[in-house]
Amino acid sequence: MAQIDLKYATMYIRDGYKGPGGDNIGAINNAAGYPSGSTSLTITGFVGALAIGDYVTIAGSLDSSGDLIKHRITSHTETTGNTTAIVITPALGGAVVQSAVITVLAHQVEIKIGEGNLTYAEKRNMQYVRDRGRLDKVREGDEDPVEVKFDFIWEFIKADTDKIPTVEDCLKKRGNASNWITTSADLCEPYCVDIWVEYVPPCATDNPETITLQFFRYEELAHDLKAASVAVTGKCNVKEATVVRG
Image 1 (cartoon, rainbow, N blue to C red):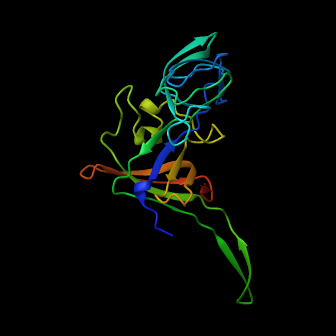
Image 2 (cartoon, one colour):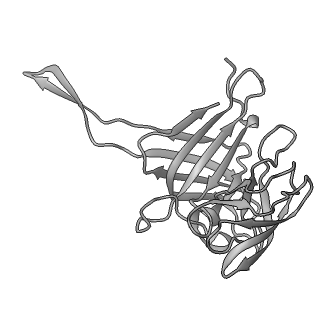
Image 3 (cartoon, rainbow, N blue to C red):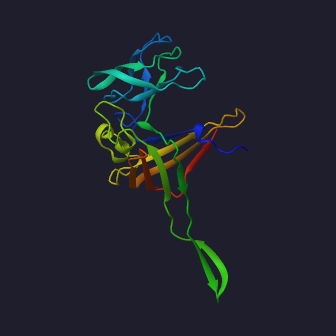
């Protein structure tokens, strides 16, 4: 088996956004559907208003590889407070039918790791009980959170208005990421995000793999101005990463 090559790994920071009403599912609302290349769509099913910059997938809109296209909303129209029409970019990659499912995606940014890396450590506290000085029973002690370290390169620490938020914006829920939603189900806990690593091996016979580090909170940001890099350390409120193959 070949060694993992970071050229084929993409890292993202994602939040817990699930659409304006907390339910990320809507649908096309046009009896004739829409042909490939369409950008203005009538929709239904959303409670509340979608936002410019939100990303959606639409069943039937596929790229040349057969994957769902991620469409960015550039304009939206509401009826009694609920979004009923959107304009998207890029255009539809295929014909879509009436009631085709529209899925709102979490907010995310790609982490440019440059010459850096990401490491994570899973730990177990094993307690060894002795009987008159000899090893006897073993039991598992308290759980430990996953420890995460990664480096990223930066051009700016904080994004200009209306620009894609920086990694640091997303970690701190500030500026252009001030509308990001924590990935924790407990809204009283400190804000957290998920880190995703998607690895697509160059060999077509190997399945891709996704590693998710859930509920990450940074604890230190070490800035290196000369190298234009930031070393991030923190912990995830889980005892192991979630790994999906295929």
